[in-house]
Length: 150
Image (cartoon, one colour):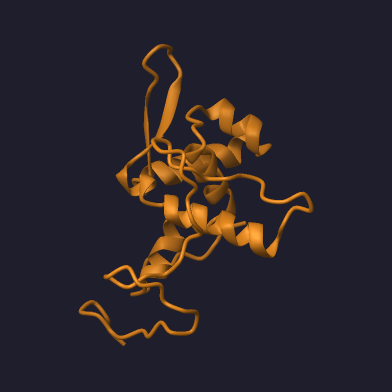
C-alpha cells in the first residue's frame, strides 16, 4: 500500500510521520532500541516479508534514522541508530507505555525499563515545563512559533 507523502505540509508532526509513521518502521525502531542490528535479526523477530523489511530499512537509512555499515567482526551489514534515531527513544517508550496502559496484557507489563547504570526504573513518559513541573492533561496550550505559516 502506497501512503501519501506529507513532505509539503508545514507541520512538524507531518514531517515526523513522513520519516517514521509507517507501522513497520516503528516496530523496526523498537527492535533497534532492543539491540537488533542485522537484517535477519529484524526478519526473525518481526515476521515481516524480506521485501517490505528491505524497503523500510532503506527508508529509515535515507531519512537519517538508521545508518547502514559493515559489521566489525563479520561480512554482514548492520543497521545502527543515528543520533536522530536514538532521539526517538522517548517516542518509542511513550508508545510502549501507552500500550501497557490502554492495551494491557492480562499478566501485566510486557517490559520494564530501567537505567542501565543505576538500575533505577524509568518513570512513565509525560509532559513537563522547562523547570521540570508536570503539566496536567488538557493544560497544554499551543501557540504559533517562528516557522508557522497559515
